[in-house]
Image (cartoon, rainbow, N blue to C red; front, side):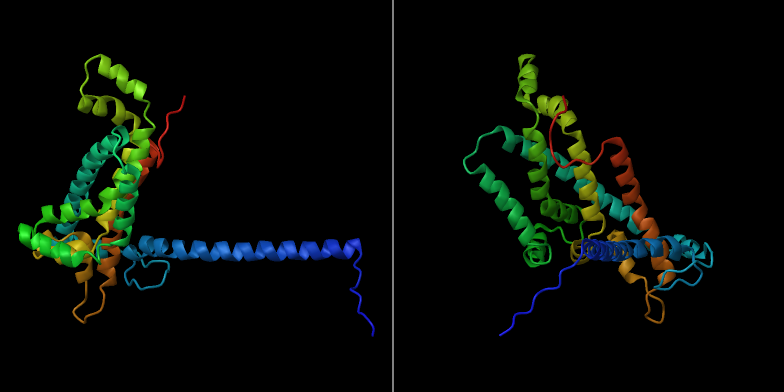
Length: 290
């Protein structure tokens, strides 16, 4: 019986082998990153070029430049009105979640309640598991009972309730990071709890509130299901629902109108993101720098 022995490589051969492995690793990482970038960049390029193309398609190409798509869009009264409806829903929901989220997180941060952490994690877990789709039937029945079908206020309440648990969970970290000595100093001067919250806590938690404001607007701005089910009047429908109706007479998606409308639809959120990022910076954790 004979045993095979492994070939012995010289140091030069081992170094060459390591260089080949290193080169293959770099190529693999580069291809992987390129695929990931293409996955995200191609839709953005289509959004930038297609609205200015006389014959837009589903592929990305250099546009045959025209502004006719925007002329058709501005002539569509429902399309322009829907942007205003989206603005109403987004701002209304943002105000509700900021006010109620700040008050709730501040109370949960300062008041010792038995089972407080369990309550917070339960709210966050249930809001993640029970999505809008799963809860639409009971939500619809509740809105019928309250007489809020075809009401933008009803849609704002439903959307705000869906994102409020996450807002409370995030803002509580900012409230916890506010030193209680600041509040005690304000209390010595006779400040009431709401005055302390407004003048002491809110300014320190401003970066978190700004991040939450953008996040809430994004969540509501692109929401399709809730307004589609709860609103009946086309004049009250937001942009995400109205875009669903952009078809040609032949039943094909009207890409000229959809591309131009998509660009206008995305601009407010992008502008708000850059404004908040430049003014406050995005932070999802509390803390005060010394």
